[in-house]
Length: 231
Ligand SMILES: [Fe+2]
Image (tube, helix red, strand yellow):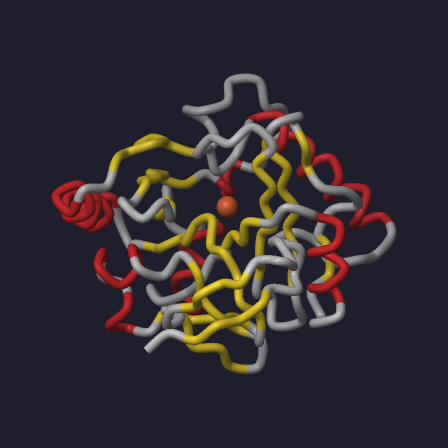
């Protein structure tokens, strides 16, 4: 059964959204996927959900896998369902961005993104090496961990202000904005990360190399002023 909501988090305050069941369970600010909600059918129908009390448009879900083989098997299932591969597969960011300097090796991960028939994007990730950042997150939170969830907005500053009232602090001083893709990551005290994303030019990319570079630079700024650091 669907309910009617009006978004107040910067998507479009005049638009009435019809929210479906969320694939997440939230405990003290931390999100986990419900075990039975990671099916193509469920995620395809979950582009509009209620999360932290707000009705939201999902830009992309991020799903974690323990290894490339499991990820590839799931991707095959999605393709049979009608999904189109939009980014990858490949080692992120190394095989996508050639001129990124001074990025730690332990952030690398196996990456594949697919566009579902409904328009929601699924990003599939698997660790690149033992004890890298993603491997540690999987050990800590399990395969139902929500690495981050990306929320599509039209006014990224208004959205960020609304999420700050919910305890989410921006992880960079300003949004990362390459002129087309504008992204802002925020985290709460449970270390749950959300991404606000504004697509000025449309498109289906879930990252850009200039935005990654900008994020790493601004992380340094943020660390200096003793705010949250990226994990
Ligand atoms: Fe993302």
